[in-house]
Length: 292
Ligand SMILES: NC(=O)c1ccc[n+]([C@@H]2O[C@H](COP(=O)([O-])OP(=O)(O)OC[C@H]3O[C@@H](n4cnc5c(N)ncnc54)[C@H](OP(=O)(O)O)[C@@H]3O)[C@@H](O)[C@H]2O)c1
Image (tube, protein in one colour):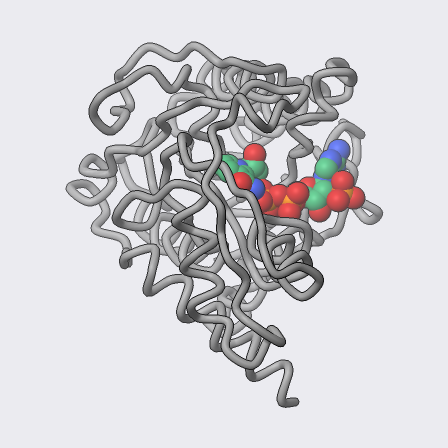
């Protein structure tokens, strides 16, 4: 398939590149420097070539978005809408990636696609507006909400924990936010699975949730990282669990953002594994890089 992936320099973009190359797809993966999705002419030209466009580009700095609303909305709302319009014009399939942060976190069971959204921060608002713009542009779209994405590269919770864990014997980590850590690699595999099945068919289309299986707090995630780090760290740091009230940030975050993924499983049956197994695979790659 002719596959365009925007945001090629990000953690999802890189994971998609690795897997799509291995799968033999005809692939274009421009970085932000090569394709700024807010440049509408360049975006249209890029979309015209593709059969499937995975939008992995986004303004993802959740705290900074609080003071950069326009920039967040330009990349996360306006551009995805235009991208979907270009796909409609060239009869290609847009797969737009969205977030658990469209929800307010006040749930007692995993979030379903049909649940009311209620973002707590500007990033979540901008992502919700992006979803709405994609839905308005064409019926044949896929929106995939995911959660707590990490990988061995870039700035994310895993790389931050490993950096701080190398410097400190003890780390304080928030224990009252619950979600599902999802490796960029696992998300990329699921998106490519969807791309292969949805292309050129009558459906299914619409909004889906995809994450790894299981739930964790950030403190649980940190403990698991340190338990699996082995020789990547000089010693195993202690994790002290704190409430988010003790760690104020510019953006509020949802307390509970576990996603109910039964719809995507029923309709597409994508590859999916526990968050612990996904983490083990990423840690194994990191250790190989260390050795190499
Ligand atoms: N990370 C998470 O925990 C998480 C959770 C749920 C959903 N998501 C969603 O998953 C998707 C992938 O995120 P990610 O984790 O891979 O984030 P990421 O590592 O921050 O990658 C995003 C990429 O998009 C690029 N970008 C930003 N603005 C752009 C623009 N105007 N034009 C082209 N590229 C642009 C960024 O470039 P620069 O670095 O140069 O800005 C970066 O390379 C996003 O839709 C995100 O909202 C992420």
